[in-house]
Length: 323
Figure 1 (tube, helix red, strand yellow):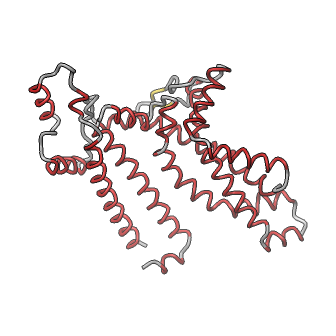
Figure 2: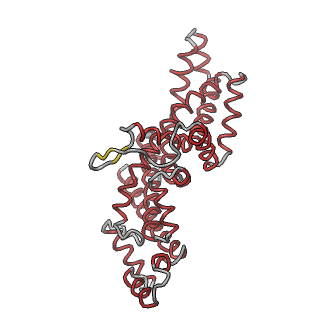
Figure 3: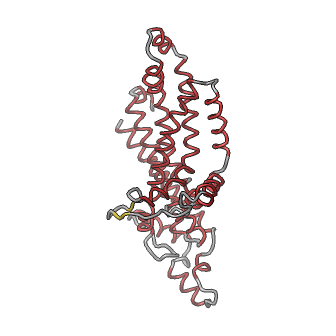
């Protein structure tokens, strides 16, 4: 197992290095940061001085070497737009994104699993048919349309919930949270529902498929023949055995939720990493864009490595089958 973990970590480092190259090369062509940062009446000399101060007058290979050297020291660079360390900016925005993803994940599990059980147990009932039809609509509509519709109904028409922002937050020193204030909780509802909708539908369909297969298995028939109550069969036997793939998918989807929260954070002006990335794109703030891509890549690589190692721990047969 130790050999596998070392090999997996080595592969992760190679992937991270590849992502660093891609992020450095790709964002060279999103725009000229000097043109964005300079005044309209700035002279050629002033623009040249700014370009030299940012290190953009150096050859690309020198810039890349400096980029990798700083990364090896944990230095993500200085934001062109804000003139602040990128690491500090990411640390400030990270709590907002993580809280949004956490609430969205809990919502998708709390609603998706029961709906999956209901649609599996009562396959031909009107409730199951209605839930499946609505889920098709939910998974087909783009996220930004869902967010705008929720704002139109609950913010503009009913005036129940705020349409943007994070509300009042509490500073815990190393963490800022809106979970401890009323305005923070109200501001969290609409973006978390928007972000959770796709995940909720995915979990519901996965639970339904697993439950249908398990309910037709021999040991469930045996349990029925022994006269066990339907509730125990559905929730203690079938659902328990059907949750393993749900846990796996949910773990993998957390990285996706963080990466694809960009749209939701933009619609609701949620001050998280996604909104930071969009603002960086608008101003060609290359260090912030590169750091965001590296962060997302590191997140996916870490989650994949953890899932692989977990499989190895859970199923000992894989330890001998792997080369």
